[in-house]
Length: 112
Image (tube, rainbow, N blue to C red; front, side, top):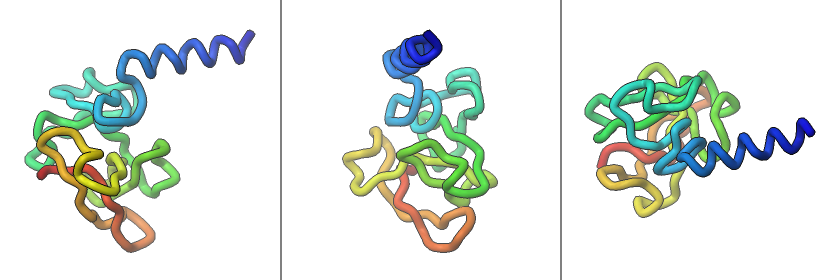
């Protein structure tokens, strides 16, 4: 019964834009305020994030949901990982940004 309830919640979140992606309420979706994002996420709406983007605070990649990377923006946030600009929503492109910890860079969706 618990397993069935878990899957119903997971499917509900996926159906209403929950989770990670260009419409994700956890990471990647558009927002204007923190209430537009799911619990544990916040809305970044500074110059690097046109139309706002939901993000999760992090100290390392291990703190981030699958499909996201922890980069050195806004004190350490998980942003959508990408390989090419087409994977990002309008107004965003795929750029290398410094990882918050561990050195190197990750390709993430950020202002075009």
